[in-house]
Length: 240
View 1 (cartoon, one colour):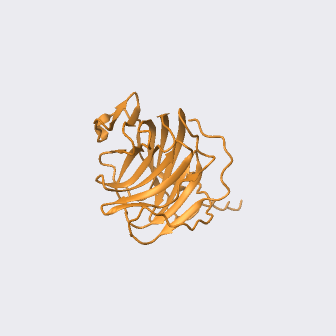
View 2 (view 1 turned 180 degrees about the vertical axis):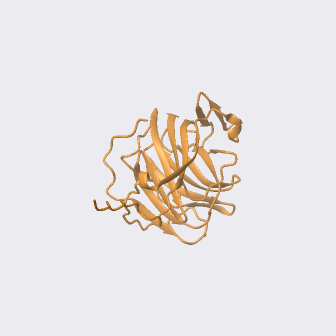
View 3 (view 1 turned 135 degrees about the vertical axis):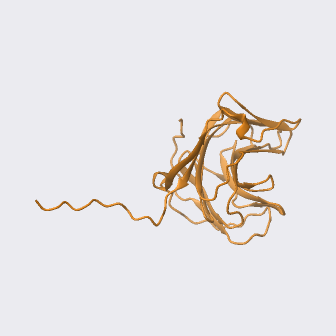
């Protein structure tokens, strides 16, 4: 799986939001947090999706865009300006988990975004982690009463911009804490308590150009390891 060759950022932007007030204006207040070790965080493999079964996804087509599964990939296109397409997986409700997927930008321009949705409830409640065609990343939350930007769009050298490009996205969600990674580098971290469980989705959003096409590949979902589990130690060697 190709990954970016980039110098990791010196600090991850971390923003905590304990309240549920919906707004499009993020509250700034970054501080550094260490990048989580995904090898230590991964628990049991819950499932993989190679995108070979369209029945596992809620697919649709319309004049404004749509989604499809073909050739081992799930593709999403948007054909009008400033519109979004969300495709959700059937029967994939999760709380704490590590979700990873490859996203391939086939056609995009500055202002276009694409990525993962987590803890999805219907089409109106979910967290979203998107990267932009311009090499930025941001996190947000959508509730019935409105959407909220949880971070500013933040540029990162870990992201391969433009098209064609391939980036590996990951969300590590544990309780109210979320870590967002691109090509194994943490680019964002936030805290939010609005949604505790839900499904998985893939999404794309067009900017002013109104033409974006992306494909997703190799979705994997792991449970998280128990942070309170005792660290295994070697048994003492009995005396001769």
